[in-house]
Length: 487
Image (cartoon, rainbow, N blue to C red; front, side, top):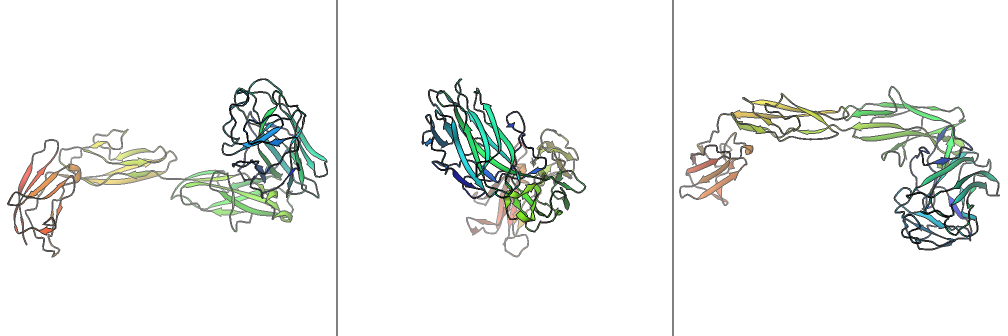
């Protein structure tokens, strides 16, 4: 089979991902050629897709595709999981390196040799790139260990850089390891060949998974900053201002082309900001959210090739939301009674207080109990974990009793057209009933405002005297009396 020709940013195999860092205990990184400047995004990212089939990749002729997720010696597959293979001699692998797609699973042929060869084009000439790939030894028990050599070659076969992993030992659980190195593309022809060779024979063991093969450009150092601030800014909504960005560009650039970029998903994807093409840029974020910015730079001679872009460090502006504070509706209460607040507070771990303090204040409960002796205005103030304040107010009217109107005139003249009982707040839980002279119930309401238009079942009720009853919970004395409907 012929090697697969892979063009940067053109195949469905490739999807841009954000920066990743070769740090920690897992990555094994060859520093045959270091990147002493800044890195760009992966201009090639071979992920092996997420669907079924070969994923568009054709390996050397020594290997044959199989749809089985337990390939035999000399076979490979593109899959998102493998389980129960060869009497559970392999690990159960339930996802790829990133957890959202396929990986390349191969059972080595009996003869050592190449199992992955791909031509990569559209890279920038005379440019340093970081190559990296994730590998797993899927064998659980001792056996033949995978031993790989990665080579970057010119299309004529000249080796530009290589790295050997040595034996990949078995692990107690599935473990992805990253391997990589730096290389420089040829001066006149940026096309290169990636060749991965398995140095060990097949048989009992030498079974491996491969995923996320990436190439990232390396160039001169680019450092971005915010004038007067650190590179990460936390600010409350409503308090944002204009922030001026600037960058320090290495003198290695002859004719640099600038492009500020933003990301709304914490650096996973970056988008060019239209018109932001100078070394300085000013922003004024308003709505709550995390705003990420960076400067991408390339030489004028390769300005149209994204594969040549190098990116600066990231500037982050976090516009923190204020707490959502609702002190509850205004209330009416009887003198001497207590009332439970109906407040709600949401946000980033807010700390709150009632001002003035509630008479029966529970500091762990925003809905604590108050017993004011007179009319009062309460303010509920909250501050989020990021220092963002918010407040809301509610009033309590304290009454000695309820005044019930003795007459109303529902004649639609705009004056006293409805029978209402001031201060009979729904929170008091009053149940109101109105009867006519014949003892028929013509109006009733429970725990709600009293507002009768003088109709019953859509029919105007006649002029006359009506009886009302108001009953409260908690054993409060029943209120009853008469009022007149006048037409």
